[in-house]
Structure formats: structure tokens, C-alpha cells
Image (cartoon, rainbow, N blue to C red; front, side, top):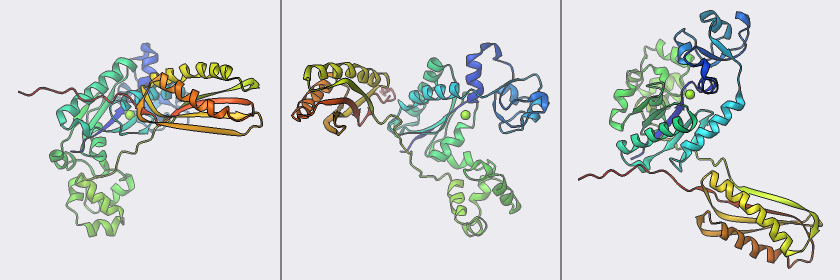
Length: 356
Ligand SMILES: [Mg+2]
């Protein structure tokens, strides 16, 4: 059974600002352009739920937001704050599945099929929410479903701090009452065109013959129909943000002195190790790089049969490879070391429950 989880931070920029300035919590907060007492240009980026109560929304002109609530707290973007908070929460999410895809600064998909049941999936979702709240003091909303489409729509179902699980057999009852625009790729214009054809809801799309959809919307008509039935087989696109960890050092004077070079390697290894540990990575491949005095650069790789974070193995491999580099008569100008083929050490498995 395929189980996909979509996690979306709640009004992310505004929540980051509230976390940094506890005194504004509970007040309407709007992050975006400068309102300049109602004369400002530009739009609202995000706002908290208190501001939404005044009818303020993302992408609304900032002047309109000011009109609705001049006493709101208007803040400029602090992207450094948001990206550091994003990195921190993504590092938490990533621990719960090898199949992880970050889709924006505050949203990610995880394939948690390894949970094997919706009960276990719920535990993973609760653990993710608890860890983000405990470590980063930020709340998120999570949707779980058989694919990306359903998981994403489910995440928006109960905001803020929501959790919605839609098993395969509930997908159609969940989607059918929604407006057509709830589906991916159906923007305002497409929705208007659908409405002109008398198609208002997802169920209406599902009941429309595919020829009619194809005639009006081309090939997208077929996607629309598949989505209306809750079908979506897009994979989680994995990308490793950290591809390798390494350091290099240039000697003050070129050298062939093995002791001196090993001293430098011994100063690099703990740094690499610390970074591996901080991200909970294991490595499989070590690369030793040497630049000779004439600037010619060579590398030697060694790949282990298993992933490890063993520091002794690192040093031993470096020593063996250095001996081979030193067979050359040229002096060494720079030495570099890096580990590749990184993988996360602990993928959190749902706790096993004992059934009697
Ligand atoms: Mg969000």
C-alpha cells in the first residue's frame, strides 16, 4: 500500500515572526510589502489567522489589507529567518523517510509506505508535529493519502495544526464535494470555463465524459478526469541537499613529509565527522584529493561495502591513499578529503504495536 504524507507549515512567515517576537502573538500579523498608511504598493505574502479574521489573505494588495485592519502588525520579509527555520524543519521531516521531496520553503512530501498501516502513519505524523513544535516551536498541518494529490488536499483540510488521513476507499467521498478548483492545475480561468459548462465540483468532473473534457481542455482534460477520481501516480522526487561533506587545506610550503600531511588529515577528519554526526549521515565513499606543486590534481576514491560513520575507517583509507600519492616524486601543495554517497542513519520507523 502506498502512503504519502504532505506537510505544510501553518502561515509560515507569520509564524516565524511570532516565534521571534512573542509580544506580537495573538495580534493580527501581516508579512509583505510596506503598507505606507494605505498608499503602499505590493502584496501580502502571508498573514496569521488573527489577520485572516479581518478578511486579509495572501496575495491581496497590501493597501487593501491596511484598509481592512490598519492596526495589524505589518512586517517586512526576513528571508534569512524563514530559510533558517525552513532548513531546521526540513531536517526534521527528512528523518522520517528516505523518500523525501521538499516542494517549497514550507512544504514537503514524504513517502511513508514503510508504515504499512494508517495507524502507524498517524503515529509518524504526530511524531513529526511534536518534533517540529518541540525543537522549532512551529506548527504544521499534515495530510496523508494514497498519493500526492490527495495528501496535499488533505493537508489543507484542517488548518492550522491539522492532521487529516484519507484512506484509498475514502478518496472519492472526500474529493467529490470540493470545488473543481481544488485540483492541481485548475486555476481561476479553467474553473470559470468549467463552470460555464455546468461543471462545479470535483464530482461533476468525474461524471463528465472524457471526450467533452478533452475537447475543451486538450490533454489536460484527461489529467483532470484522473485527478477527479483521486488518481495520481507521480513519484516523490528525491534530491539530496547534501551530496558530500569535505574539507581541503593548502600547505604553507609544498611538502612530501608524510607526518606533516597526516597531521593535516588528522585535523580535517574530526571536522568531517562532526558534520556527519550533526546531520546524522553515514558515508560509503571516501575521496582523497591531492594537488601537486605543479597544480596537477589527482583524486583517489574508495567505496566501502556498507554505509558507516566510522572515523577510524576514514583515517585508514586516507593513509593508504596518501601512501600511493607519495610514490610520485612531486611535492604536495594541497590536500583535500571528502565523503560521498551520504545517507541518513536513522529513518524513524513507526513504533510497533503488539497485537494479542
Ligand atoms: Mg504553508
